[in-house]
Length: 379
Image (cartoon, rainbow, N blue to C red):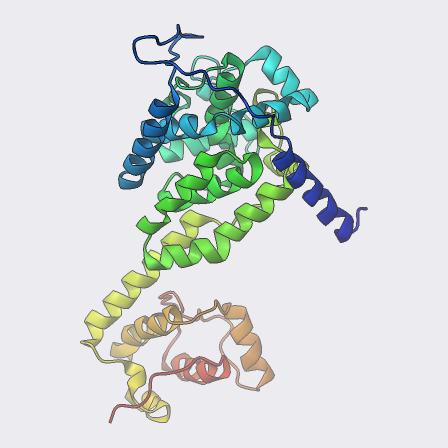
């Protein structure tokens, strides 16, 4: 089994090979609007250096204003991929046996080449089933990707088209949704993996995230993206059409991709906490149950106020900087000889299964044992 040092060295070697695999400087053919050359393939629009620069700037500004303008993001990717980066990606495919087969076969991923109805019948944890389920959940189809227009070389244009059409497979095997936060995580992963400039430029959209979302991205998803993008095999060399029956976990292990934290579940939990906090504030009229001295609290807790206490403990749980599992608190209580009913549910997220006031009293003992800072007493 490879040692951690060998793993790090292998990751660094792959990273340097990607960076140093740039082709020599390319000649730029100058032409005017009146002497525009003929298209090299269907839909191709040749651009001179001024037009390409204008397209890049305009697309970057427009996609920042509206991150859901996929046409602008596509134009930005094509305008910034030349002359070096798309050529580097093509060379990476040529240096890989599977990549060479992809360039030879030139498969396309559309609703005409892949049957979503069939994919939905695949085994539960297969790549094809995960891909179809992700498309259904996010409300997109394989046909939502624009055709390449602004890359001159036909084979390089296909490389960009292949990257674009397999982008959703990256979403599917990582589970990251198409919301801005999830898209940024995938783009950061793709930049570390492919070095395409558009994927890095897309990170400017982080300014559109809320404060909590930005903090979560920098603390959780950006480190995950960089770490996995650098160590993973280049996903452009995956022949996805041949992996549809493969187990998702097996493919992730083969590529060297870790599963990121479930972003949708995390966001849902945050929304539930915020709703619980807002509801508690409304019910308490702006006053906190824990603003009273702790030793006096059980004397004033009756059955009619049990729900208020549950909501307030949810508020206290929301204010924690780290997550303390319920079982951890139970273990702390047991170690300190402060028993708490094992059948009760600690209401950190608004649980309502406390059996009675006696459990509430035990809960009040459990709170200081878990090192939770309570609000100071009212004057």
